[in-house]
Structures are given as structure tokens and as C-alpha cells.
Image 1: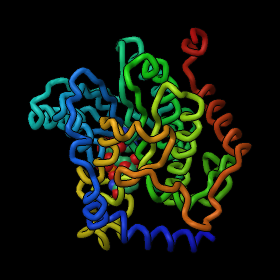
Image 2 (image 1 turned 180 degrees about the vertical axis):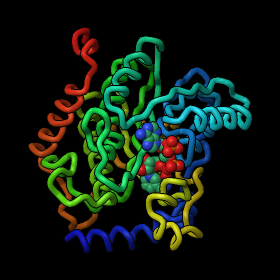
Image 3 (image 1 turned 120 degrees about the vertical axis):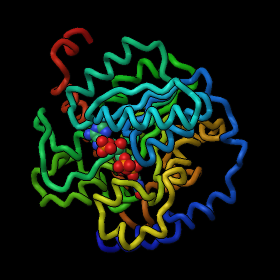
Amino acid sequence: MSLYRNIVWFINGMREYTRSGFENASKSFAAKDLDLSMVGRSFMITGANSGIGKAAAMAIAKKGGTVHIICRNKERADRARDEIISASGNSEVYVHVLDLSESRKVWEFAEAFKREHTSLNVLINNAGCMVYQREMNSDGMEKNFATNTLGVYILTKCLMPLLEKSRDPRVITVSSGGMLVQQLNPGDLQTERAPFDSTMVYAQNKRQQVIMTEFWAKENPRIHFSVMHPGWADTPAVATAMPQFYQMMRDRLRTTEQGADTAVWLAVSHAATAFPSGLFFQDRKPVSAHLPLAWTHSSQHKVKVFMRRLENLAVAVKPLEMAVTS
Ligand SMILES: NC(=O)c1ccc[n+]([C@@H]2O[C@H](COP(=O)([O-])OP(=O)(O)OC[C@H]3O[C@@H](n4cnc5c(N)ncnc54)[C@H](OP(=O)(O)O)[C@@H]3O)[C@@H](O)[C@H]2O)c1
């Protein structure tokens, strides 16, 4: 089954995820969808010093939005901020240093942000990683899971009250078409039992992002949630995490702007929120989160078990003073 899924995913990808796939899809895009001012709206974008996140931050800053960029390295973040301010002429771009793999710090950051800001209209969970070996963070969590899943869970959950009281609130998560090869596996969230294959761990985390989005959409009708696949874009993550794939595909990869296009559209357009909350998007269209005949659907019970385990892990790393006050 997993060979079948990989083959179907790659064949689809060659047709749809490449630059030519974007060019074909973009023929049906409505230019007016993005012809909007974002002045007065605030956006938080994780991993915005590079690649898709930086392209999204740039596009939103050019529309006048206030942009909070969340990055783990201050120098890289400051460089990106300066570049965005200089190209957009918008000085409302703010750097926040946070390593999303450090679960406890994610709680602390989100709680402080909530105290210091009166509104947040849009959260874009973009930062992602593929750590090759099984490494643990300082809370004892496997790092891919901590960054791609638990970090997204804690940040989003903690910011929900702020989003809920803001106008037209949205949460967009940058997943990956790679998740199509994986079925949710709540039984081994930190890859303690199976052999460690970083590509499959990443794909499982990206499936988990889709499941979280679907779950949150049902639980929180005040916020519009969506999750998306950017296609295959030429970014440092692809070059370093998948060097062979990068060598083979580099002439066919999307630009970072093309990779960011759907995330930006989901974050700003009226057309995006005309769709129900909780869907998986590719090139400005909702698409199936499952390959045909791939048996990757999950039962309600499995989803509940996954969400309960996530909540338990998130609570376990919550700083003591926050656990007492909340
Ligand atoms: N490019 C593609 O073809 C493709 C395809 C499918 C999905 N995606 C998804 O797109 C998203 C953006 O990736 P990209 O391709 O644009 O790669 P990228 O240019 O390498 O960007 C990844 C960003 O995430 C940040 N990041 C990683 N781990 C972090 C952590 N622990 N704490 C804070 N920030 C962290 C990186 O920071 P540093 O610069 O400090 O490393 C960087 O800013 C990811 O979620 C990725 O899974 C990309």
C-alpha cells in the first residue's frame, strides 16, 4: 500500500506540484481576490525569515498588513525584516525570536503575545522541519513532532482566545502533499517504536496538521481554519532535507512566491472564507486530503485519541505558573 501511495503521489506531483502545475492552475485564479488592502489587520507568520514564509510575509506587508514574524534565529530574522520593510515600504514588521521545537517556550511566547496585543487576525503556521535523526528537545519530545505538530498545537490553542476576539480571524497551516502517503498514527507520536525514517516522520506530522485543522474547524466556529499544500517550491528546506529530489527537480520547482500564493490567498481573500472551515487547499482550491483508494481516512475515535494525546503532552510541558493561572 505504501509503494502504491508513493507512486500515485509522485505522478500527481509531477503534473500538479511543479512550476508548470502552478502556471496551469493560475489560469483560473481571479486577480481581484488579492486586490485588497490589509491595513489595520495583523498577521503572525512562523518561519518567515526564509522560503514560503518570507514570501508570504512580503506579500502581506506590501498590502499594508502588520506582520509578526516568528523565527528561531535573530540575525536571520532581522535580515528578513529589513528586506521586507525596504521592499514593501511598510515598517509594521516585527521580529519575535522563538524556537518552535522548544515546547515550553512556545507556551511562554504565546501567553506573552496574548498579554501584549489586543488583536491578531491571522495566524499562518508555516515553520516546518525534517530532522534526519531521532533527536529530543529539552522537554524530552522528538524534534520533528515537537516543531511540526506540538508547536503548531500549542501556539494555535494558546492564541485562540485572542483570534476569537479579533475581526474575521483565520488560521492557516502550511502542510505538505507528502502527508497523502500517511494515515494518522496516534499510537507512536514520537517514533519510539517504528524505525526512524525522517521523510515518513515528516509526512506523518503533516497528516497530523490536516487532522488538527479539521478538528479545530468543528470545535471553533468563530475562526476560519484551513490547511494547504504549497506545491514543490525552491527553498532551503527542500535543498537540504531532500538533496537528491532537489537535484532532479530543481528546474521544475516553483518560486517561493508561487509556493506562498495559496497561503496568502487563504489569509487575505474574501473568496477563501466563502469555503467551509477546515478544508485542505492546493492552488486556491479545496482538494481531497486523501489519494484515491489509499485507505488513509481516520475514524472519529482515532482522531479523538490523537487530539487527547496532544492535549496531554501540551499540558505536560506547560510552565507551572501558567498551569496555575489558567
Ligand atoms: N518548499 C516546498 O516544496 C514545500 C513543500 C511542502 C511543504 N512545505 C512546507 O512549507 C513550509 C515552509 O518551508 P520552506 O519550504 O519555505 O522552507 P524554508 O525556506 O527552509 O523555511 C522553513 C522555515 O521554518 C523555520 N523553522 C524550522 N524549524 C524551526 C523551529 N524549530 N523554530 C522556528 N522556526 C523554524 C526555518 O527557520 P531557519 O531559517 O532558522 O531554519 C525557516 O524560516 C514548511 O512547513 C514545509 O514543510 C514546503
